[in-house]
Image (cartoon, rainbow, N blue to C red; front, top):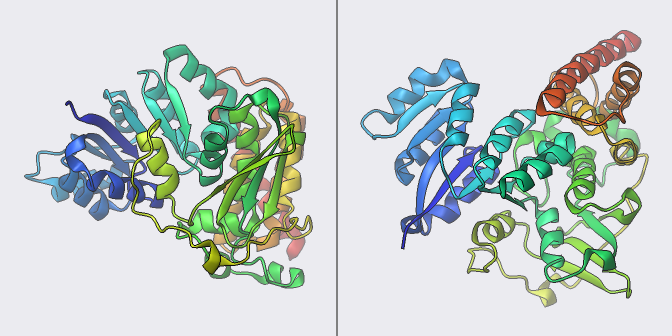
Length: 395
């Protein structure tokens, strides 16, 4: 039997590392085509050597000499920069993990779909900024997109064998993040270190802070609309501190189908890797008697203003998702740099949406990937202007 060809974009992040963990456990079944990363050259080179990848690519062009040195004698090709990422995406593969964080993951994902591959999508920005374009690209080339977010994988699994016409609602759960029990008045003084600690999940700093602000969940609401083709009114979110129920699907007969699993991303990754089969995964099994209690409660709009913004973005459609994502990423940069506070991030995003609505009309349809990238660039500049305005107001 021929080995399955796989590539992992964003191999050094938490999703990429969990994907590598699963593939390495059955290495003989896979031929690793490409691994990509950013600045963690030591990890990228180690994994490329261990898995015998054809090529390892760093997005940081300045780090190419370091990557070449780390791979010397291994037979693994080294490359760097945006063009190298796209070339790696052009290499034939049967299954591609799209886990590059941010808008940088857009172009490689689109390029991979042109070859009819299965795209395991962990890059939230692809659906948020260019959902209709991405899905159209997949249909045009006979490619398949499988969700890797734990929530969307849970919804996807809950819909197997079901008729979408019978779906009344989709409920996305949220842990509430590391600051969920803080008094609201104290949130303005939260530091990146405070927001970067998660009670349940082991993730990178940026996504963990997005979890604390619920911008991560706001992105997931928009993703749900785009991927499953439901209207905003059908999408709900609830706080679920235990992170055991990842999503629920409600049907027109009143039934709720819930997906339960330990907070381990290898659930969703493994499902996408082996789809349509289910195979044994090295994840914890749930002991319901030991859990005893599963809690659910409505999110507080004052604590999590990102959710209201997501509703507005879903209603607007068009360029709104791209602007929202660009502003969200820029606001987080401002918070990490100490230029704005934790609770100021939503204000920056809202100001950017308002400003960009006047400039381009958020509801106008997105025609091409170039449109997305141009809007992304303009929105980031606008968001920095909003940050500068906030700084002046705060003086």
